[in-house]
Image (cartoon, rainbow, N blue to C red; front, side):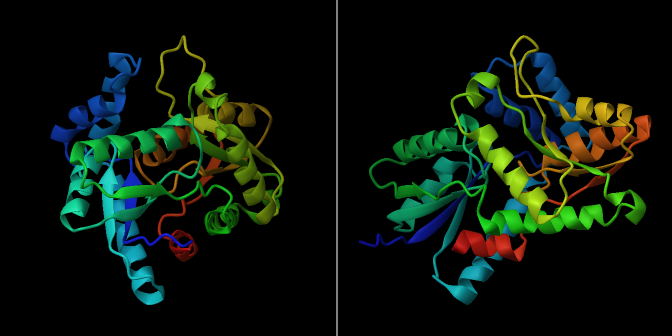
Length: 301
């Protein structure tokens, strides 16, 4: 039996849009986690470099706008709502608005392609808490499956990697390395999910589609204490290893992310690029899927 849905809910991470919002936002993100205060201040400085504004909210607004256009043209004509885990618009506020609008049953699209506690289950828990906060009028929410291996996610990444490779001189292109990056998580968390295997599958699909076999999955943006083992190798360590091996060119493809938010524009476009300039390694960063038409069509599908 087909279950009727009367809305789509975009669920994302959230981010500050001014310096006065940075520390409250970060404390929301890190509540209950064993993260040193020094790391919190370090990340706050990353936001300070960009005026305290995370691009993720603007990117989510663009995603919602693109999906609205897709639904208007292709159907079904469902309203779209957007709620965040860690900052405005908070999920509880969004679900209250949905309840006020008479929404009973919605499909949730989470802006994370992979399965792990922080990228899947925690979003489910946040939705459940928001429903409890709203009460008995809260809409039912069904989460759409993880989309890490869906052609609508893989094919735009293939296109982006190909475009990045084309920026490398033809005579050096065949020996260039692709570093697929994703957010590092604690190894204990990774062992209880399919996060790594899914990332490996996506990397293989994208590399094969781009017809380029020199690649490796690496990690970025770790935030835990040094005593806690997290997924490695770190992107900066790997870049140094490539230079020591005599590699001249690297394409960094952030397949762990769907848009160019803070972990991309700071950890890769700022930190990794500066490191590559220091060690003399040519770096090209592949774009994320963003609002690529195939990706938007995938969400509708």
